Length: 309
Image 1: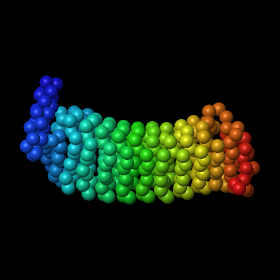
Image 2 (image 1 turned 45 degrees about the horizontal axis):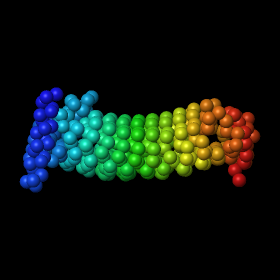
Image 3 (image 1 turned 135 degrees about the horizontal axis):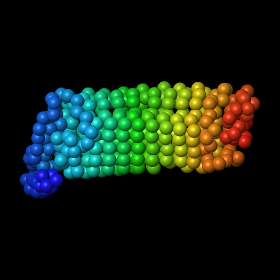
Image 4 (image 1 turned 90 degrees about the vertical axis):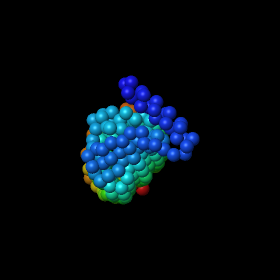
């Protein structure tokens, strides 16, 4: 603990001195596998070499972990191909990250709780975003997911409370559990054709007013849109086979649902998207399928089932 205190004091003193001299000095450095790192007096961490970054169970275990609460800028140079698990977890002062082309994965909790990070540019080469990769980056206002992204992990962007919109790339086929849960300002999402599954609580607690579900979608997870209380209507695609419990629970403004499937999708009886009753709500279905829906579990969720106008 005392060593940590004196090292951070040295950073502060050196930062003040070098600010006047308009240059920076290396405070600490080392080697991890085939990568080298150096921490500079302007609170910049530079990682270079050709290798993947290792995973850490705890950010304190990383060689730069002693500086995690004063790192303001991270520069990953060309040759770094992945950001390891918990590499920058809890870097509360981090405002800027430079990621090179060629990097393919951001592992679990890599930037979890980086509360000062406002934006990040991801490389076109990125394929995988791990579980909790950006959880609780509460200042993050925007992020562009490259077209090459195939996987978005559980809670990847959960509690990014300043995030207002997101476009999911075409290659993504499933959105992980609670991936965008409690993104309190998220009002606009674009979902790709090819998406087949929206995970449990994926968008719960957002302020979405409308959402277009792709034709390819077959599964909506438990509580996927729960407490999206600004959502007023939704159209469920023809190929949808399964809606899990509480998928739209607490969506108090949702009064109109259109289901395009000619065969009633499987519906958990706790689907109710308001509290205990949907008496004033209308379900619109294909004209030839009205009776099938009225004889299904959907009749327990809607008192009015009628043909699509």
